[in-house]
Structure formats: structure tokens, C-alpha cells
Image (tube, rainbow, N blue to C red):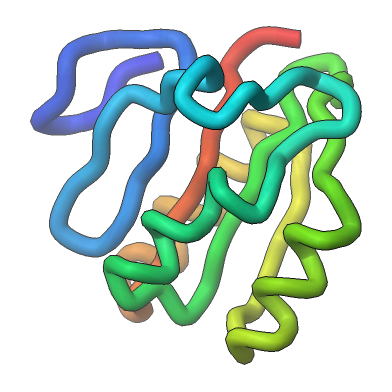
Length: 107
């Protein structure tokens, strides 16, 4: 994947004003059980009011129910989508809102 201002990579964590590579080993993330609450804390810390979570191109990346609960409790609007849909949605939302996202480019 290519993100403006960042080196090309496989997975990304994006938030208002920036982003970085998303290194799953930081939190022990795996396809199953999926995106963990610790994976989204950085997005919340950057003031995201909307978060887009990508499931990969083949929808193999899951999201833990605890993650969705944490985001709901924080009052954050969440979208969980296939990666190409997630990228398009993120780009649209980034024009007008404080959006963050986790993007998994492969499976």
C-alpha cells in the first residue's frame, strides 16, 4: 500500500495528521481473534471520532468484540470493511472529519 508521506508498506495505522506502519507484533495481533483493543488506543489518543477497520482483501482479519465495545463506549463511529472499500471510505471521510484507520493490505 502507498500512503502519502509514508514509506510503502503492507499494513498501516492512520490518524488525523499522520500515521505509521502497523506492526502486529507490537500487540500480538493475529487474524483470529483479530484487531485488539490495544490496536485502536493510539487512534483514540489522536482524537479520532470515526474509525475505519479493514479486514484484508479476503476478509480474514477479524475484530474482537471487546475492541468494538471499547470504541462504542468512547462514542466513536466504526466501519469494518474489506480493504479496498475501507480505503475509499477513509479517503472520503478524511476530507471532513477526524478519522483514523487500521489497514491490512493482504488476506
